[in-house]
Image (cartoon, rainbow, N blue to C red; front, side, top):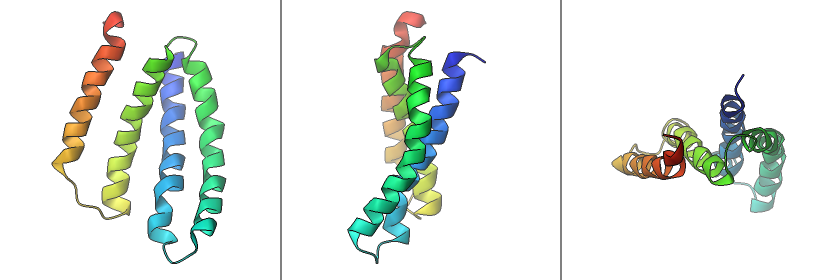
Length: 115
């Protein structure tokens, strides 16, 4: 499998853990002290890092660090929007579309030398 594809798949999985670590406590632990939420989030984030670190190392063999970062941002928005709408019951807003379009511009500028 190509290193870019491996990196993207690992970053996608790590981002799912990251999104839960960063935001699920807002719904599930909002009645608990913030310290409990932080400790639980750190525990979840461990799994994020176990996937994210190898993803970046593998990706860095063929991509620049800037390209890896933009891929991560696209994945973040791709994971976050369904999470916010389906799990946190936030309204779906056009702002997500505009943010996605801005990210597409960032993808273009970071990858234009390869186009």
